[in-house]
Length: 603
Image (cartoon, rainbow, N blue to C red; front, side):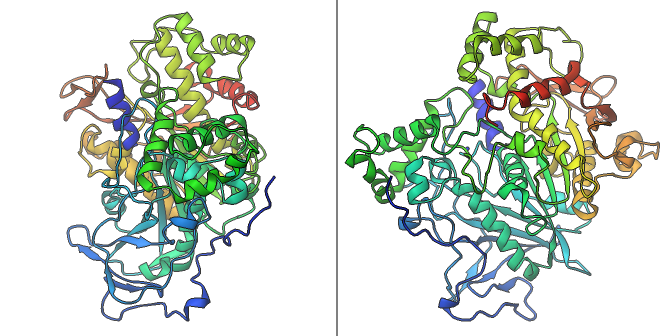
């Protein structure tokens, strides 16, 4: 049952001469293909001419949104373009392209304990570098701010098919949304010395950069303002936002975006591209694909591995990627971002500490119970916990493990519904994994924007029980009133995201923060005057709901999880202002511990 929950949350919820590589993506169609005319067809708001392609979208009359799905932003990364930087689309003006349905998703690569076999007939396709645009059809002015969404899924799963319609509508149709796809698993994050010499590592991140450059070049055709772009993601999508924030050592400024929203930023261990662990994943992948005969590196055979992989069938590589990831630790992926010296010049924790970030403003959050779904259920005692720690943090010494346990002593707070209990070895493991992988990175990201006169950040925690990793996605991508979140909380959450996109400040009206269930009263609510985050005043808004009293029903969460969510007319918003450093028995000190361990937990 844990596997089912894990899968559900993640779905919503990583000596030869240098050959000439394709040029870095600029978002501009090559002049070799002729001059381009960029205009929207007069009198046809659903038909957009991008120069290289002409697209016809569809109208959502209920929400007044023009929707364009399956817009190509890069060439298909197949054949010689496998593991190469994304290239601008080729010109194809032979017909108007129907943009009323999504493109195929990128090949999927599940994490450990997730079973997925794939074939040529699978739904995934390497030709997957497409994005989607939602733009208000009833806008009376413009250009409008733009929100770009990156999906989560551990850098191995997911697609760009989230529906941002409710989010746009809640904010009065005052911004444009772009959702995009990027290469996943081994297709997007294969790393080794040979990959770096013959192609690129972090291809998936370069796809995201290419999508943002497309936005800069073309979003004005959809009434979007390229100077008011905010990037947004959850889990690995939020991790992507964080990596884009530190991309190229923070030298991009506001050239691609001004604002960042990171919900539960996923920060797995980020090794160097030719370190032992990513290199072993490369050879395991090559072996599973039939491209490696286990000769040592430098042998004649090893120099042809890359060529063999480039020529291999998609289904062969999909299964090889899945096989390698599934052989790892529970809740982890084998193919993840690596430090490459260019896009990622160091581990994020160090870059963030140095304030080397792009953009100007950040809204950063975490869920109250991030780690439970990623923690194996077989941790019953302290011995199991120690063994799990050694497997999860392979560079830790026995002394390091002792320090971890000292920071995470058992404590029974099982009567507090606002946060899970930490009285068992499994509970402690869940807290350790959740903080090291999701929560503390959110703190470091908020701090990076807080300690500059030109920048600012805002921090929140999403706490409605069970507040598992990924539970928040339904709050901002569903019509208010959709379980397991209350309508009031969904409206408040969607409103604060919209306000940040539009105004660079997430503060919302008192009536919205208090909610309909409270009579839309205008009693002062801390979310109406949201204080910026700072290291000397580390304040965050806690987004929670009441879970007792009349009119409240506790509904089993499902997926075999020992949790419930609260439903019914008695559920009311409970939004408070808290100290992010002192909450949960002094979380700030533990996050400083994890940052200090950066050499042994490279992230």
